[in-house]
Image (tube, rainbow over all chains, first blue to last red; front, side):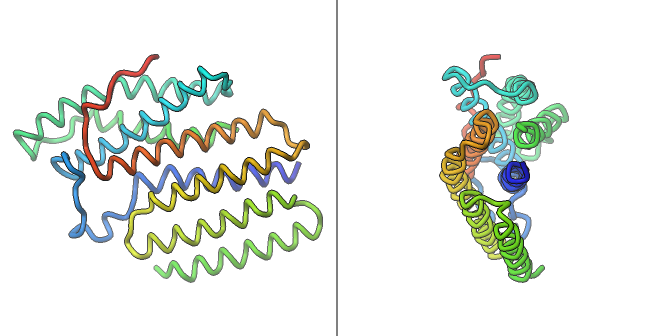
Length: 132
Length: 118
């Protein structure tokens, strides 16, 4: 049983790193060298898109695996349900914000979009910690 | 911050722990390989961060390594397959997220964000 606990510890630590590092990155270390992705208006626009794309990828993978017979723990099912629900709320908010940035690059990020992004990041981290 | 020192300390500590636990028969050879892979991946990740590079490419490598090592662990019949399937799913979801994040570092295209079935 100690071996099993060790597996969980190692995998959880590694997986938390997998989710936390991509959303923090190290762009702030040297902002002068940051290159925006093609199509991005500014760094906030790029970051929001990246988080949403990551959330969509995880959700799509989960939906596919469910249809192929994977049975999640109740906690994972709840987390993924929340993730999908928040993504469906955040997507149109972000698309409207992205369009607004094209005419006003200084447009502030809507508060409800920022809150949704935080929820998505939390859900991605929870995939690891509640799978157990 | 001196990442090299941190990596050295982590690696040394991990090797000591591995040696002690494996000598007592607590860690299976499969798990020992898994931890060794993670230690090496962690060192590579710290090195990437230290040099100011994007960590997402090395993270993809870590996820791939985890998948292959997990396949070995799953052959251990003493471990409940239900548990390893949950671990496997977590790795798959995170890997998918990282790959998408990597792609988003190159292109921002909100039109690809379509409603998901709830």
